[in-house]
Length: 389
Image (cartoon, rainbow, N blue to C red; front, top):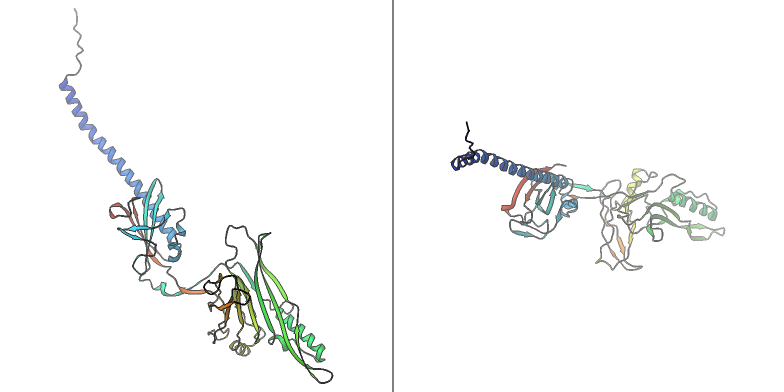
C-alpha cells in the first residue's frame, strides 16, 4: 500500500498569524532593550556630569576668589575664556554685574567619555567673615636674623672697636656702651646674580662710623671720625634653573642702632623687621623708639615713579615696638631709579599684608551641552556646594 507524501509548508494565513504573534512578543522586548540602553547612556552621562561638577567644586573650594578668577586652578580641566551666560557676553570672569557674585566659564570640560561646558558661580554675599582682615603670608625663602651674642653681633663688635680706638686716642677707659647707640650705620641688603653659575645669592653688609671728641696731651679738643671694618654675611644662595620664581620673599631682622644717622639700603627683594634690643629696658626702649627715624632706600633700575617697584616691602619700621602704635611723622622711603634720581615710595607698615579677602563663598556649578553657548535649552545639571574654610 502506497502512502501519499505531503510537503506543502505553512499557508499564507499561518505565516501572517505567526509573524503577528512574533511581533506582539518581540516588540516589547525590543522597546525594553532600547529603553534600557537609553537609560544606561543617560545614567552614564549624569554620572559623568556629577563627577565633573564635584571635581570643579573641589578644585574651586581650594582657592580664594582672587585665585579662582585667574583660572589657574582649572589648568588641565577645561579651557578658560570669554563665555556667554543666558545670551549675555561677559569679557572677564569677574564681570557679573552683581557685587560679591563671580562667574567662571569653562568650555570642553572632560569627565569620563563626556564633554560639558561648565558655569561656576561663586557667591560671597552675606558671609560676615569675608569682611574681617586676615594676614596674607608669602613663602619665606630666606631669613637673616642679626645675632645678639657678644662675639657675633656686628653692632657690639663695631662699638668695641670704636671704644678701643677712643681709649688709645684719649688715654681714658672708654666702654663699648659709649658708642653702641651713638654710631652712624648703613645696612645694605643685596641680591646678586652670577649668570655664569646661575647662582642667586643674598648678602648683607654693615658699615659703621662714629664721631669722637677728646682732649690731646696739650689740652686741645680733637674731633675725629672713627671707622671700622665692614661686617658682611651671605645668608641665602640658590641655583636658578629657570623653572620657577627663584626668590619670592626674603626676611631681614635687625636691632636698631637708634642713632640720628642710620640708613637701610635695599638692592632688590626684602622684608625688613626691627627687633627689640635685649640691652635696653622698656623705658629706654620707649624713648629711643619715639625718636627713631632711619633712612629707608630701595635701589632698582627703571624709568621712575611711573614704574612700580618690583618688590612689595613689608616692614615694622613705622610701628613703635613698645606701644605698637604708628610712628609719626612718617619714615621717608626713597626708591632710587638711578644713582641720583629717586621718588618717595610707600610701604606696608606691617610685616605681612592684612586685608579683607573673599575666601568663604557659596559654590554652584551648572553644566551644559558643549558648544551651545550656555543656553537654558542646553542645561544638563545643577550642583550646589559651600566652601567653609
